[in-house]
Image (cartoon, rainbow, N blue to C red; front, side, top):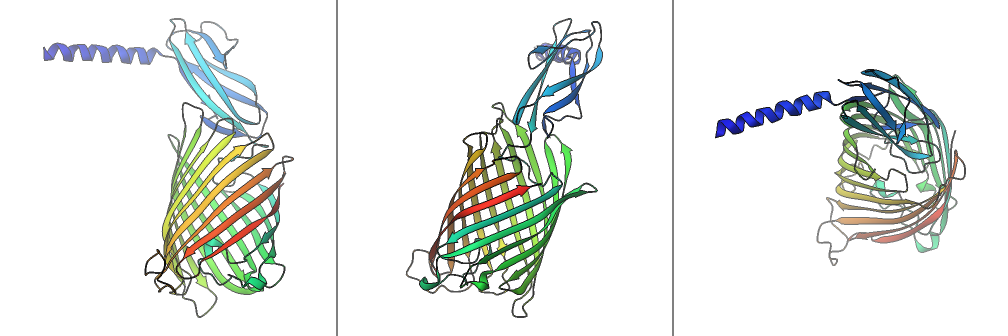
Length: 404
């Protein structure tokens, strides 16, 4: 009985192999299942092979003209793409009725606001300018100390932002070099921050929707008009890309970052920041909505023992396109920071160790009124639960950005 079952199984596998071998094959030339282009008229090439003469080829339901009796042929097709994502369905049938299908998703870049790329892809320049009202000026959430929490009579200040950068590509590396400057109109000269930076990234396609990413960034940071630090950031990670049955693009990036910080002050000790990241992004095929979640665990060095800390972070964003040029972004960011020093107060539910939990809720509105200029309105509320220095902060304004 077992021998009969084994014999039947072998027969089934044999005929399955014969059937698979007889199925026509489709191969795109210079085109992957997930592709991007800036050309509205896109020429695609497909190579077809079959054991029997090819009878019919359709692309998005349209029958293509082919010579009969061929078992191998290459077909060049001119595609008219729409802004955003374009789904291309290719189907081939041979004279015995064997059929194969392949699906390709081609994104026409330009007016699409939601981006699914994780490293710069365009050579050129960018300019970002912003004005924001801040009712409790302080250092950015990423710096970890609260030196900038202000007295009541010194609140309500205007912050300006300028970021000028060049995007470059050389020997397979892509990157950005620029200057980032923020400053307040009064009271807060110590919060003026200027960064000169140079970033380089490289991605290697490993096949099967996987990419290996490698990056380096150098930053020379100045705070309050004085040299603060020189930072060397090294990053590496593995990115998984896929397209599900609903036409949604999915990206999962598993990444590690190590940063060496060389402080200018002799009273701060040089050290290393380290973190691991889990970064997931989902984008609709028609670019109408996206979701992004970033979770981080790591340690942060501030050069002073009482400021250095370990942390758990979460950054969540929901983005919805309202029309071709307007997009809304709702974000929530939070960190749970654990410090080695003692808190000022132990009468809070946060315990006897120094703990800070900064949280930020933000709403951004992007208006891409032409392919190169974008205006972003930003409104944020920051609340820091702490058993040392609790505070809250409201932050709103406009940012103008141009890529050229």
